[in-house]
Image (cartoon, rainbow, N blue to C red; front, side, top):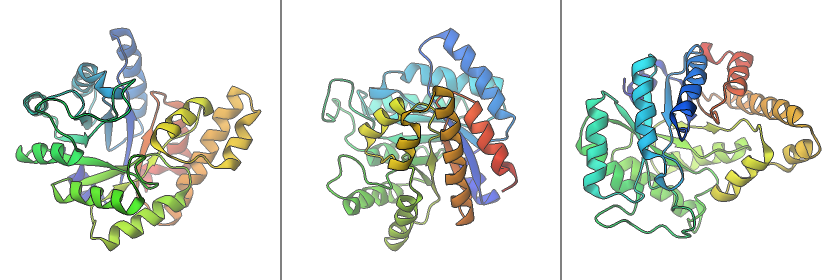
Amino acid sequence: MKIHEIIKRKGKSVSCEFFPPKDQAGEDKLLVVIKQLEALGPDFVSVTYGAGGGTRKNTMSLIKRITEATALTPMPHLTCIDQSKKELKSILDNYRLLSVDNVLALRGDPPRGQIEFVAPKDGFCYAKDLVDLAATFNSFSIGVACYPEGHIEAPNRETDLLYTKQKIDAGAHFAITQMFFENRFYYDFLERAGKIGISVPIIPGIMPVTDMKKTGQFCEKCGATIPASLAARMESASPEDCRRIGREFAIEQCADLIKQGVRYFHFYSMNQAEAVTEIFQSLSLHTL
């Protein structure tokens, strides 16, 4: 099923993101988690491409298993990293053969050790180029990323928002935000997006903090801000208390979004079911 059609029909969506494990044993273990979360009734699930595109083969393998072993609607990530136009077209052809109807088009982060993005030979420089390619198939629901606090490489938020509009205008049907922890960034982004004519659904990406060190590393790479109050609460907490605090914070964050009329949620699960399950159940997200 196409994600933008699901959203249009239901007026809402709840989804989860996974990253592909490195081996078969890890994939088997993750499939158990995916089936646990399937019981919550998410509208779709996404599978990342790994830093620098390092797990792209595993992405397709996991997408294939999801289509075979569950009733979930999958959305693979696809990036421009280290791939020619011909290779990208072949990947999209394979997804179409698997009856995968959705793709998240991203430029991607540079491979480890590489500071700046370098376009591959005969490849693409920007996510917009990948949206253009996916749109030629006329068979995919295309998602893109957006950045409430601005992309870390953009000179300012206004320029970054114009880049987002270019991706939408190229044929993207919806956008999913980078993780954020202060809702004011999301509300401001929605207001600014509306003013320049962006009308597609903008789905907030929610990261339940279960490990402050790892979350801090992610934030450093993407430019997201961790509230000082949250960091202070976790500073001297035990690992168990950190997970509890992180879940409580995410529940409060989502509750505020719901109060303001938000009906879309995308959870960065970190391949764990516990935090997402508690958020689902605490807020009765299936009944939104």
